[in-house]
Amino acid sequence: MAATETATLHLRRFLPRDAQTVADWVEDDRELLWLAPSTPAPLTAEKVLAWTQERGKPFVMCGEDEEVPLGYAELNPLRNRANHRWIGHIILAPAWRRRGLGVSFIRLLLDHAFHDLRADLVSLIVFPNNRQAIRCYLEAGFKFQEEQYHQFGQPAKSYRMLHLVSAPPVPAKAQ
Image (tube, rainbow, N blue to C red):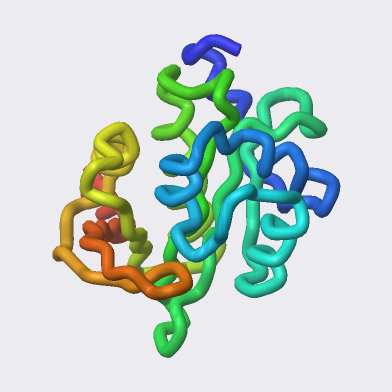
């Protein structure tokens, strides 16, 4: 699939059969830390399924072949704010990275959040040294909000994170 074929990309609900595929995409411990800092290595299908049971709003991005996921993410309601969504556990299949599909995936998630779910804000957190992901999120429409510190793991370790937000697009003025 070439980058020019991104018009065929779409979201579908994550299915349990996708869990092993998603788990296989993690290439090393650093990538697992960036993806799921509270999840101990190695990543397994069971751990991916546990994410989906905890949060409940997982999606995969597919091309023309709906059976083959190209990306995975969760689009979840933020506790205490019904119209605020957050995106978590964002990952693309290794073969599809560095082709602009990450931006397309994030834009599909934002479109779903703002148009179908009527969100008024979407946020995510990212490690500051995950430069490729940060570039992707900024290109897709996110803006830097603030630095935050989060604790992950056992024993808990504190990490500096960047909190990014995206608001719904402003409609063009009628001419």
